[in-house]
Length: 419
Image (cartoon, rainbow, N blue to C red; front, side, top):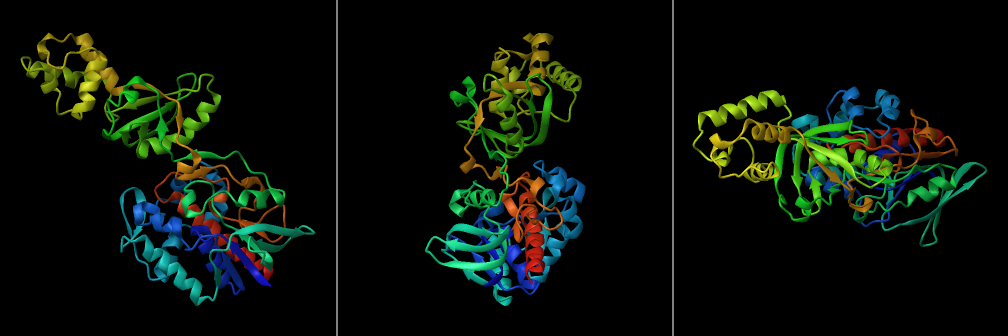
């Protein structure tokens, strides 16, 4: 008989097992894979973006999927506490752009190893290669966990931390949803977030811009009425299937939602390559450039304002001959070129699959979870944390922060309940 069983050895599960162990509980951590912390080990490009140092309000804004649910949790254990927690494990963190925190070692494995050392110190029992068949509930209480190999373990409290359905090779294959439903929980519709976007536009099909990266551009998603739903100013890249890169990943969940409302399965996006300039200012600057070198070809006059491939693409889009002398260009043509720098609109028609997404949208409904403890409102002794919950953020340390914080509360409160 265990006080607490934690299913899932990702960020939230490791944190939950440590928190329960620190509270003095007898803990069993189960994972179906060979190794714990597989998602952690590949996160942040193998460097592990442990958390983000933005203030709480900003952090919650970067978790557009039910981030507000985490207000109470942040008041108990927050991103600064995560930094202190890792310091206590001997992992010093450093701050990079946009508040992202990485281990000084730049190695995700050092973070995983520190967590495993702590589990061992706390004598948490670990069973890997132990896929769970089902969870047993009796008289509205958690009773036991049955493994696929037929073994079963009794427990007073259970923490389900098995992740969502994205990045399945790390073990996130959506196993936990059935155990949650069995306890009476609602699973909200699952969808991919932080995922590359597909487009059927002729310039995408012809691979005209494939491989081209644009820096600090503004990408907006428009609704059916042409109004902006969301805008992100970051880098992006054109691919053989559509668009990707940070700005696109952040817009993707909004594209998914708009596609659901779209009768023709298309959503318009707007690309602004000069987000910090007003269109009039840009037009005046272009006119000055043309005036200064009227004999040069328009391509050479404008060559420093944009990456060459995108410049040539926009000139052709506006039916301007790149080799024409600058002086021969009408103001009207220059104006339409300026406009397409600020408002190049094209349609997108989908995203890569949920399995290829970085993050799963949807999950166990937060309405059925106690926000201060991560306890189920449906079943005594049951707790949820991490990506199985209907909480999703942008990449940049926000999802992992939510995982560590919900994991901490789930583990502490599961221990409190059972001891």
